[in-house]
Every structure is written in structure tokens, then in C-alpha cells.
Length: 68
Image (cartoon, rainbow, N blue to C red; front, side):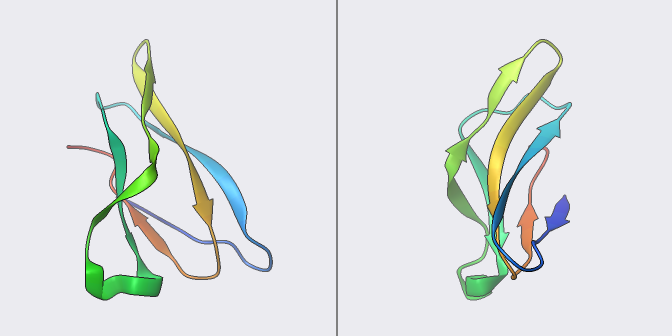
């Protein structure tokens, strides 16, 4: 798990997992925490021994799943 947020203005970050990942990035957006873990609009892209995805951050933390 990774917890991340942006202070000030929204920004995008690149997250990386050493676990094989596929499909959409699963996360909890604490803006709507009652929805629980959801599929984001971003998908994992895997190359060699790692997978990565771009995640948009705001003032509210996002809890990002980095393994299956």
C-alpha cells in the first residue's frame, strides 16, 4: 500500500510495483472513502521486472494498492 496526496495544487506522480500487475490501479480515494476500494481511470503498464502507473493526487489522500 502507498498513501499519497498533494499539498497546494493537484499533481500527477508515477508509482511503481515490483509485483506483476494488470488492469486498472485499485485505490481508495479518501474524498469518497465510503465507496471503498475502486478501480481508477489509470491502468498498470509492465516492463521487465516492474509495473508502473500515473496517479493524480489532490489535497485528499489516496490509498493505492501496489500488489494483488
